[in-house]
Every structure is written in structure tokens, then in C-alpha cells.
Image (cartoon, rainbow, N blue to C red; front, side, top):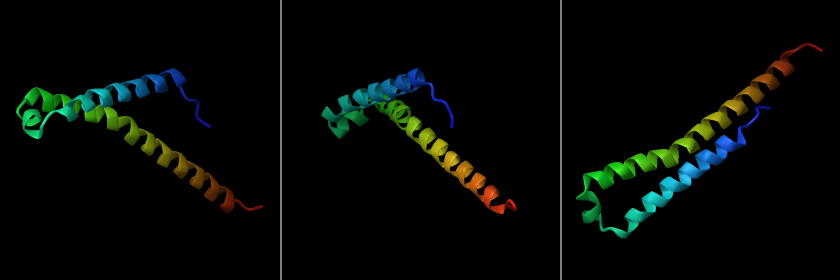
Length: 81
């Protein structure tokens, strides 16, 4: 079972929450106001990536763990007793 760096996980969650907070500020703007500012659009893109990336990485890690468990199970089943 892998060990997890709890402090790093807390840091990542903090970064995600910060990015989501920054993104929520744009919800008060009209579409026209938002799209009229290249800086706002760029900031939103960046913060969306920061918010989504840990989820994608966690899912990849989860799939890899599932694959390793299945592979170990398959090897065990193939071993003669």
C-alpha cells in the first residue's frame, strides 16, 4: 500500500479551493464582460486547469492501483499450487 504525503495533499486541496474561489468571482460578470477581458479569460483557463489537474492525476493513480491489484491477482491464479 503506498504511503501518502498528507501535507502535500492538504496543499493541493488548498490550491484547488483557491482556484475555485477565483473562478467563482467571474460568475457575477456577464458573458460579454468576461469575454471582453483577455486577462480574465486567461486567468479563468489557468485556474480551471489548476482545479481539474489533481482530479485527473488522482484518477490515473486509482486506475493504476486497480490494474496492479488485478495483475497480482491474475499472477496468483496462474501459479500452480
